[in-house]
Length: 326
Ligand code: UDP
Ligand code: MG
Image (cartoon, rainbow, N blue to C red; front, side, top):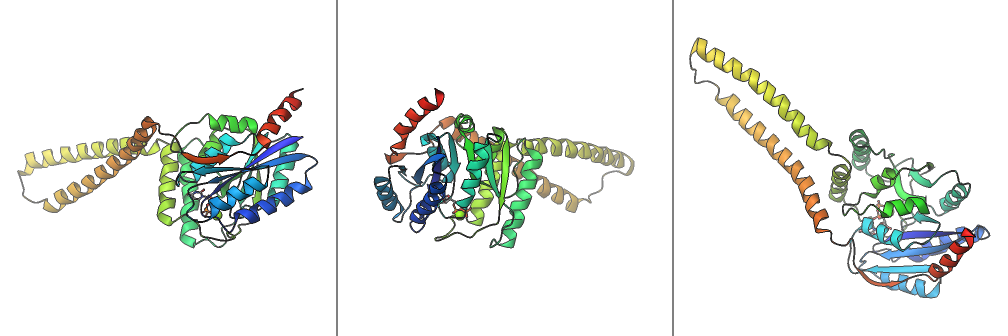
């Protein structure tokens, strides 16, 4: 029998985590003759009762693990902690707010059991309920990042996905601190299949993504997966240097022929301001890369765990692995 780990990052999800457990259990009850499952809840420094509820859930259910962070480290860190703790033959990552329909998990498991695909990911086909401007920025962000990096991320592709053990092992080899998982999942490759679904609004609570956070996330994605912005500086530099050279010839020749005129105040001030601004922008871009080098070099841990209760399946799974090898 195959064994599946479900990783669920949770930040202030007190009204969702129990409903989530019940709906996942219903799905797995249907396919219990083929697969077993464990849930790994990662409490990412919630300030509500999420931690207490999860602790109770894990003490009541043998197949529930609970990892409690010492503070909020962000969803990327929570997903990483879950992947590291997961021992399944495949791992599914899901949000706790029921925006990722649990019924799709059954479809993912079936596709995976057919052994044709190593990754089965879900993609929302619409952005119902999302502000227009936010959708517009998202769409164009995907166009941009796909245009300037090696990875191709589908618009609407979420972290909701099933990954075979070999995919997970390779993702865990990527130790970078600035984790942009959407890109990392693509970067490792493997055969993937897309399942489409229509957007669902969150069950209870609020999204933790403000517009500013999304812009920062987009910059993170671009800087983590592309050095194109640095090349833009070089290309722009060559272009302006060449144009400046032509202008210089013009100024020299006209001075020799017509003598020195005192006109030109407006153009000098415009050039000064314009190129001052451009230089600051490119300094900022270089700064984005240097800042990330700084964070990588310090090599701090991705998260700090206050407490963890691991599912008893952890040991059962070790036996089960022995069995499947025989
Ligand atoms: N989440 C987390 N840490 C954070 C923010 C969010 O673990 O700092 C979790 C959250 O509990 C949820 C998932 O990440 O399970 C997605 O978050 P959210 O629903 O706020 O994002 P959205 O669905 O709006 O993209
Ligand atoms: Mg959500």
